[in-house]
Amino acid sequence: MNGSQDMTVEVDVKIRAVPSSRIGSHFASADSTASPLVSRVHRATRATTDGAHTGTTPPADPGRSVVVRRDVWSIGESLSERDWDILRSVYEHRFLTVRQVYELHFADLSLTHGRRSAQRVLERLRGLHVLGDIERRKGGSEAGSDGMVHFVDTNGERLLRAETGRPVRRHLTDPSETFLKHTLAIADVHVTLACAHRTGELELLSYTMEPACWRRYIAPGGARLTLKPDMHFSVSPSVGSDYIDDYFLEVDRGTEPIPRLIKKCRDYETYRRTGIEQDRNDGAFPRIIWSMSAKDPAKAQRRKVALREAIDRDRNLPSELFCVIVADELVSLTKQGGSL
Image 1 (cartoon, rainbow, N blue to C red):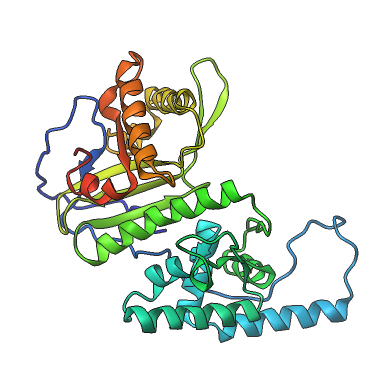
Image 2 (image 1 turned 90 degrees about the vertical axis):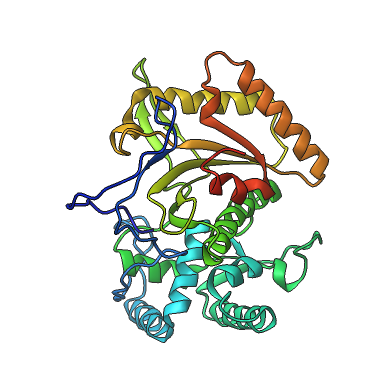
């Protein structure tokens, strides 16, 4: 993810009318440019170790260790830039399906050719143990090869550790169905925004997936707390616009009671009152999008109405801070600066 850079030149900006609390919007300089649709950093691959502290693992055979390092080095050298981008994307999102990889990395190709190319590249990366897969067997719209879910495998972890020089999150090979569906739904939000960026409907300037987007802070009573959004992203509602709208995202799949969602809303308000986010964000606090989804679209719509009404009834919550939508309203919402 590309972080925002300090701007050293003064530019003229237009002023958008926003609530006095400065929710959601701040201003872009004339030379602001969008970051890539997927994370991209400079690659400097070097020989790897297992990254464990001394004494935490049995002594390895020195000869085997050298072979492993050489093998990982050769694998890294054999990967194309797109291979590396795919590896980083899968790590960043935890899990990605074939369809999602296609949308993020092969959408410049025709649908048929792009899907086949994505499947072929992913098969090669699996063969190198750069990526692993979880076969989804419950059917549905992503059953079969397109529904195959990918995670970062052992050699992929070694390569990322070598690239960043830091420990990397270990992969989950057997996640619960609930966790997997929720994680893939968050990834779908990024895919939706990336597609809208590509077609010129909006400009996706930056995005951060969990856990990198979490916010640690100290509550008024002194407790150390962590706010855990599913995602944070910044967009301009049209390409080249002077306005930047920031959002925290919460994906609801209909598995939690509405009172629990209200509790999460209060967590956001508690964090907003600290002023931490505003201090580093030109005085603005991101709007919070609740994206409601369910297997039954009617259920998602009912929950959207129920959550909206519950927020509006809560006197401790600023109603304008929260946007409640069903999943397919996301692009329309962001194009209109957070209002429908």
